Image (cartoon, rainbow, N blue to C red):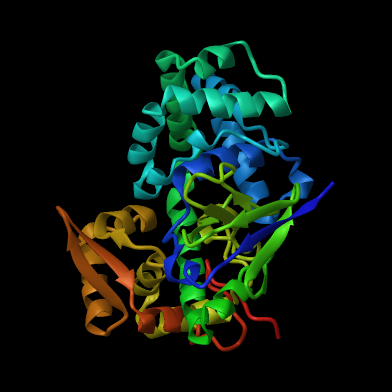
Length: 351
């Protein structure tokens, strides 16, 4: 029977609410597998398209083996799966998350695997994992890496783009205060001081001054998911809007009128307009060139013009220069299209 997730805030918790910049790679690995095992007719369109392609990529033996191992630990219909699969450190990236997973203590493995066994039968190797077998733990970490690298990485830039757009939407809502931000998170409901949402079971999280980290998820498509152990830092993963299908995943630009595209191309030039649109997520010059099949020198020239016009900002990160849209650039692609046109990764307001 469906229940409710209720998150209780104190005044101290409002000082420690954090919004992740992008989806978490290890949460997405688990939730992406859930999409693969969910009937297609129960998925939003953008995930049906991803599911079809991912199932084709999953044909290799090592990917199938990784899928089976993770599915045993975290099946899509599970009301519980071990928290060590999604360590907090993965917010720093997949490498950091896998390192911490491999370092999971024996006591924690035993505790969380025992809890998992209360909910469903586990394979024989799970006993060795619960006993702290580091070889099996390495196999689990390798399985997460394989799933992410084989099934998620090909579309990861679009996952990040959708997450960045969601974050921008939350920051805009901040003009109305934190309560307005919480109210902008469907399927959450904010009734001060409780944030609630549908959940597989009734679950109460009392933050007690620890704050909360909210993480967007491309592959979470129904209800939020929360860290199970109340002793761990509170984390809630929430579904991104289902009406935000990125262009590269859908193969089209849903809701975008050809006239609007043509107008943008007339204003900037066709390839310059394509370069601007490619920067819905931060990219290097080489990334843009590869994505659009244009010479890097040509892309560099377009970026210079866009930067001089205040539409793009560039900064050096290590050996690379990265480029992103400025608020003016986003306005041109989104807010400037006042005819109700959608741009990939942006939500259209209801009429």
